[in-house]
Structure formats: C-alpha cells, structure tokens
Amino acid sequence: MVDIGSKITQGEWSSNDLFKSLVPSLATAFLLLLFTTAAWRRYLSPLSDLPGPFWASITRLWHVKVIIFGDQNVQLSRLHEKHGHFIRMAPNEVSVTHPDAVKKILQQPMKKGMFYNISAIPDWRYQTPMSSLEPKDKIERSKAFASGYAQSNVIKYEDAINPLIEKLGNWMDHYARSGEAMELDKYLIYTSFDVVGEVLFSRPFGFIEKGEDLGNSIAKNLAQEAIGTPVAQFRWAQLLLGNPLVTYLGLSPGSMLMDTAMVALNERQKNPDARFDVVAHWFRYLQQHPDRTTLRNVQAQTTTNVAAGSDTVACGLQSVIYHMTRNPGTWEKARAEIKKAQREGQCLGKIISLEDAQQLPYIQACIKEGLRIHSPVPMGLQRVAPKGGVTIGDRTFPEGTTLSVNPWVLHHSTELWGGDADEWKPERWLGDDTTVLEKNWIPFGAGWMGCPGQHVARMELLKICSTIIRDYDLKFADPSKEWKWKAYFTMVPDSWPVLVSKKK
Ligand code: HEM
Image 1: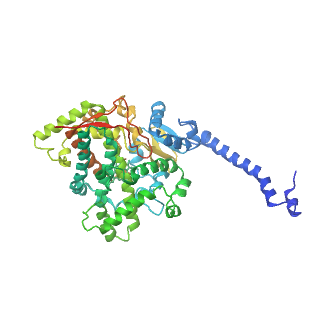
Image 2: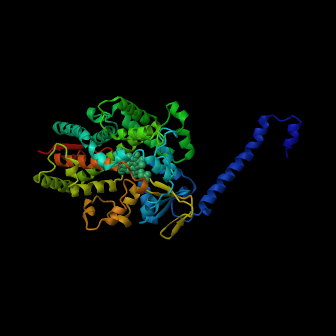
Image 3: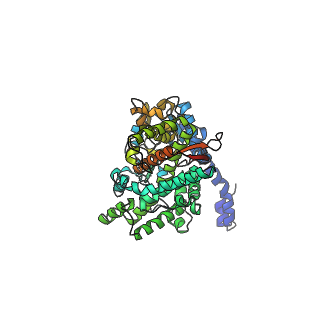
C-alpha cells in the first residue's frame, strides 16, 4: 500500500500524483452516493409505494423527457387511467386527479412548487405574484395589479380590441376571396398577441395588421418555451439561466420577451393618446404606494402578462374553432343560436359585443368545452404539502411533498367527466346540474392563484368565436389530417389549414 503521507513529506509526490490517487476514491464515493440516493428514493421514501414510471421515482428526468417529447399530458393521463388518483411523476412530486384535488390542493393556501421560480423573467430580480412561492407574498404583490384585471375595468377595453378583431376578419375575407387555404392558427395567435398589447399598454404589436410573425418573435417565443419548460425542472438550471449576468449578456431565454415588453412599456409612457389601460392602473398604484411596489415589479408583471395572456388565449381560440370545424353539427347549432339572437335585435354589430355574446348559452358551452378538451396549460400546478402533511382520500402526503394538479389531465379523467371525457361534447355543459363539472373545470387554475386575466380571456374568446361562427364557414383543407401540438407550459396547436367562405 502506498503511504501517501510519507511520500508527501519526502517531497516525492507532485499535486498531479495526489489528484490521480484521489480520483478513484472520489468516483467511488460519488457512485455510492448516487446509488444510495436512488435506492432510498425508490424503496424507502414515503412515496415509494405509489404507482408511476420506475425512472420517475428516481429522477426528475422522466418528466423532462415527456416535456421534451411534448406529450406529458397524454402520458400522465394514461397513467392515471391505469393506476388511479395518485401518480409519482418525480422523486418528490405526485400528480393528483382525486375528486378532491382542487379543493384540497389548489384552493388551500399552500406554498407553490419550485417550477414557479422560472416565472421571474428574465432573472430573479424581476419578481411577480406568479413567481412568489409563499401565498402571503403572492397575495400582497397581487394587490398592486388587481384593479387592472377587474371585470368592471376589462369591459372598458372592449372598444379598443374591436379593430383588431376586424383585422382578423379582413384576413379571413381575403382568403375567402382568393380560395387559398388559410393558416388560421397563425392569425389567431397574431390576434391574441395584439389584443394583449392593446389591453396592457394601448399598443398592439402589429402582427395582425401585417398578417405575419414580425421578426419571427412568436416563433422564437415558442422555441424558448420548448427549451425553458424542461430546463426549469431543476432549481440549479433555473439559477444558471435566470440570473442577472446571463440577462446582461443577453443570453437569458426570457430576454427577448422582456425586451419586447419593455420597449412597449417605455413607448407607452411617452404616448399621450394611451387609454386608461391595464398598465395605467399599475402606474397609478405605484404613484400612490411607492413603498409597496416598484417600477421593476411593474416591468416584470408586464412581461409576465405578455407571456401568460397570448399563447393561452390562442390555444383556447384554436381549440373552439378547430373542434367546431371537426364537428360541423355544433357549428350549425351555434349559428342557429346567433340567428335567433339577431331576430331579437342582438349580435348585429360588425363585431359581436360582449354583452350580446354573453346571452349565447350554446356558444358559451362550446368555449367551456374548448378550454376543457384542449386546456391551454398542460402542466401540473404545483403546491407543497405544509407541516402536518395533506390528506386526500385515504392517503396522507408528508410535509414537503410536491402535489400537482394538471388541468389537461384532470379534464380528461373518465372518473370525473365520464367515458366520453376525450370527446368534444359542448352539450355536457347544458345539463340540469353542472356543479360537479364546474368544480373540476380548471383551465384558469383555481383559488388564490386563479388566473387574473380570465375576464380578458373570456371577452376575447366570446367575441372572436361568436363573430367567426356568424360570418364564416370553414372546412379543413385536408380533412384527413389532425392538428399538431406539443405540451410544454402551454400547448399551442398548428398545421390545420382551412378553406374559408364568407357567409352571405
Ligand atoms: C384562455 C386563456 C388563459 C388561460 C387558460 C390561463 C390560464 C392560467 C393558469 C392555469 C394560470 C396559473 C394558475 C396557477 O398557477 O395555479 C394563470 C396565471 C396567470 N395568468 Fe392566465 N390564462 C389565460 C389568459 C390570461 C390573460 C389574457 C392574461 C392577462 C391579460 C393572463 C395573466 C395571467 C397571470 C399574470 C398569471 C399569473 C398569476 C398572477 O399573477 O396572479 N392570463 N393563467
């Protein structure tokens, strides 16, 4: 055996020799640690008896893999259908579809899971209600922004978004005249981005005006989501990507989004014609309470809203229009509803008003069904079990367990929605008692973290869908082809070109 100590004292050993002799021991120690951790996670953890993929019990990489493949929703849904309410989807994360999931998880003031840290865009200096993990912090931060989203204020934005919907209509007219197939998916994305710009800072980005993805920003945004969602599964990776140095070097995945939002926000501050838009509410709060929020918080919230309010609405719009085109019977029924309203003097404006659209129960049912069957957020909403754990049904999860409720997965549970959970069926919303359905319908989340932008989203969905249904007939350019989508943080579809004809 080599006597390292005496060799060193005799001066015969170089640091290189020392390093070489230590490498095998370090490697062995590392492997031992790895195997012990894996064995503990798999066989001794309090979650080890839960069903789920073998690799998910050992490493979060299983979740990363299904995110990269873009089918985390389908994979989890299958596992739940096979094994029941609880699936271990990562060493310390359990996906839950129990009928009490919403009440026991999302509606409780439980700390949010680690994934939410990534929503400080582009780095940890830009904290928002979304990125604040503690309920108390989140609720405190939200106070600065709440009035901008209030229903009573949202209806004041309606006139401003009508011209954008008209522009969408102009493009549809153009394709109806030319007979060319229209990539309506893209135009719906352009519209939803522009509406967010108009609602937030009185300035659309110009996508629907030009009918193109200016500077490829939407495509880049989606690409960033495809990279950011899997990367954000690890805290160390979040810190590596979302830190001020990376922002300074312009390398952060969120940089482009933030730059777009910041340019718009700066121009907004110089625009004398700006409406009393959403950011006007936020600046007023900043002026009145400089001790409670900061300019940086307003900037961060602006960026978050551009991200949170555009792809999501685009998903919802696409889902409703796509499924109604696939099921023309529902389109006809919705049109008949509008015709009846027209005979009563409603729905006559160039763009159907929110007030009139709210009187169309069948179309509202189609929108609910669209947000159910293709929930824009196919990612688990994570909460962390507090001291004392959380009991759901006959199972208690210990403190520190991440419990997540995935809207898409919950919306496809046959236990909750019946054997036809995977089918498009707006009629399910018109039954006598829809209380159980409503309870488990969570496209906007639920409880204290519920989406603050949902009134804006509902307004867009109602106005745009009802106007398109009234004014156009759509057919798939190739009916044999299904749309495509990838389930990252949102799941924006593509590849369903349509032939448009204008209703006389
Ligand atoms: C159909 C459209 C939409 C859907 C399905 C949707 C869904 C969601 C969901 C699931 C959450 C997270 C809930 C949780 O983590 O528990 C969320 C949060 C959020 N959404 Fe939406 N959203 C939509 C539209 C919008 C719009 C139009 C805006 C802005 C105008 C917006 C702004 C936000 C913000 C800022 C948050 C973070 C939470 C907070 O700040 O309080 N969303 N949304």
